[in-house]
Length: 216
Image 1 (tube, helix red, strand yellow):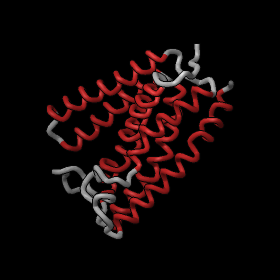
Image 2 (cartoon, one colour):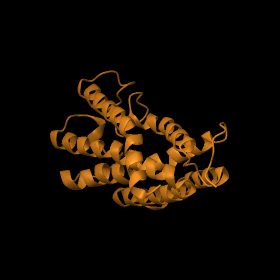
Image 3 (tube, one colour):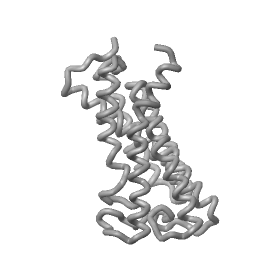
């Protein structure tokens, strides 16, 4: 199959998940703006743990994409290689991000370095199953670009949502540098890398439980 056909297939594969993800992003924004239940719509910095959020889709869609690709004959060259690279990616991120957190005192530099570490981990996971890695990358872009845009508008308008809050101790700065550091850079690097790594991990592990062909 040539590259253009693969690109078209990838777009079709991620279209419905991307639209569902966009709907959840908008619902999350509406929920926070209207001060709905914090259990569902956490407005604290990072928004962690909120039940309404697109992060929960990543492992689910990792399984979905893996099954679709494998059934279409685009499985990994080796189950072991795919799983091994995904596990190694998690280990790379865990070790290096911990080192950065412990050794780098500057919050801005820490954010930048952790994004670089995440990108490295994504590359490791990608090499284990390139077809799944490309699909996760495409989905990650579709999922995270709208969030980056929402964050910019939220910061400019001061809506009082988690979209405009930095980590504890984050210094005061202007709109654009703040957005680049806690909006644009994390959304287009860290969270896309997270999507690739976690999606590849759950997708690869799925191969252990189903009789689906892999590429030779």
